[in-house]
Image (cartoon, rainbow, N blue to C red; front, side):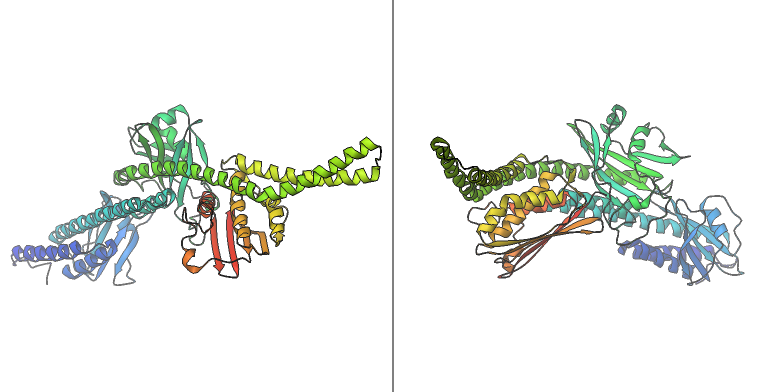
Length: 573
């Protein structure tokens, strides 16, 4: 196969072979869905057709000073990076006669270049035009693959909506989808709008180089009137940091929103927690370009979708259109989240009320015993006063016993009132030691009456965890009550706590009847219960509380040997 044909050969033959080559390339590219495989095949085919000794595919990523070689044939070949860089920048470099270059487009803008070289044998102008046609075919195929990928990602997320997965899981499905489509290398986030006062709260955030959890989850960003006005629109805003200041894309006038959302301070260590892989770009890394999409309904703004990258020029109209395609699904996710939170709050209140009733039933015997001991002592003391037989030593002993009984009642009633009030469910800081002590203070008498021996290993000085005190108390009340109910004939209840890196680990372990394997898969489902008067909401509520605290809960059990629940809750540094 000869590309550079002699002058006496009719060019029609070359055009025919080029036509066949383009058809062969197009036929293969139409059947592949992998952009990398498509590019490799196209480079090999072009090298063969144009009888080149060397071939390369180069790109100039945003922020890079020099072109980067994505593929080289043969492996290990070298190319003039300066030449490739100038060509990709459109600077019209002097190209050697034995080299031909053609630009590739992707995401609706120049993206890379394909280069061919034949040492010492010059190419004619017809070869330059032919390679441009090949590059155009490759560009068309790659952009088709990208569109198909978009449809595939969107269909997968739509499927998650139909499956009604938890809203926060759906948030991260959306952020993962945007990562695969836009290739952002800094971060993305879903923020939810709250009123009274107006603010945006970070509900989900994905840091590109971390596999751990962002520490900015829950961060509140107060909103001013100019920012609220921008949130009521349905546009996708683009921003670039120029000379240290955020500048919006032409014609948008939305810089107040960029200043609000540029909350990353450039310290990668603060962007994640518990990273298990991937290295941060460097200590000075910060977002230099950003896309923001306000999410609004007829009732007003409900949130915002944000995507950031490390280099100016990473995003353009193509990426803005991608983000816009995800706005509707993000809106649905936030609305579902709000409905779910309302339902879960009602469920938690129902569980709390049932727990109070259960507590009252459980401690009534203890209160009755305590007050029953007080009454005869008071009557005896009154009789001693009337008959003049007051013995100070005896009265002091009786008063000590009365005080002890009343302290028992006070402790029980105080604990019940704390649980009933809910201790403010707002996300704040929770004192785990106080929550454990309060729970055991209420349940200790019923545990003792059942013959349950307590082993408590909760050290002083534990840091606070990320969560409301009421939720923390509800969590321990449910778990310790379950452990107590599993040991009707006595046993050992162990409560341990220790610091584990950026979290506290709690273990609640009993030596009760255990859970059969066929029930383990169902115990955390709402309304599943094995108790005669249970609601089936206890463990599902625990799971939700732990999720809200961004922690983990693990349950292990062996029939006849007991159950162990391990909680891992992030701490406040």
